[in-house]
Image (tube, rainbow, N blue to C red; front, side, top):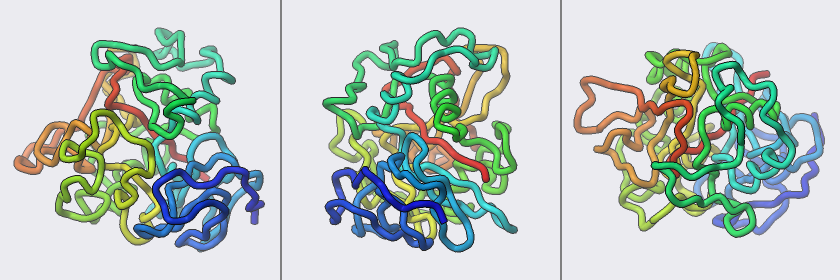
Length: 305
């Protein structure tokens, strides 16, 4: 078993005040909160000094940059890991300070600056790692998210079997990592259940003018073994490794889970499949141009053993 030491504690919002908390799957990892509602804060992670945490015969890396990770069973054996929270401003700032834009895929050659930028959809930056360290980073394009995950020795969530996931598989829990984690393996429409609960997560019904810090809505998490995965519904939508082409900045790429401006009957919605709950006949993925930056879009990463 890898080391369990950590220098990071818990983000605001939980009942615990610091230290290590044992998770639902066993093992103790620095800065990780227990799974259930109201049983500790939201883990910021990324500060453990050990190798891998263990639990139930599975293990996720401990000490990688970004949020702490948790295991997601693939079904039929095996697992992958996903960040327990969205990547924060403070975590992203460490990447900006350490990384350069060399080595990106050819279709990201347009991307010459990883620092969040203003745009039509991002007129006001919330990127201030000092004043807003625990807010999810936003105003980043797909290539920024992809590069962060690679730098952190993770990957932008894609196919359960590895690599990108086809856009047409966006609502297939056997193929799509992000969707599998959000739906508890394909069992629910929202992380917390099959029926929308207004303001349980950061959505249109919440009194939020901007994305809020991770942990501010501590009941916005999955069920059972998925209970330590937070904010997959609302707050900021999340880039995924699923694009319509690999030509460049105008490629359409998926973003998941809706944002603080969305609800159950908008498109994209805060459902795991982004569908309008009032019209589930024709499901469509939520997509944006690879080069686009929006205050409503951030990301989290995955990891394959």
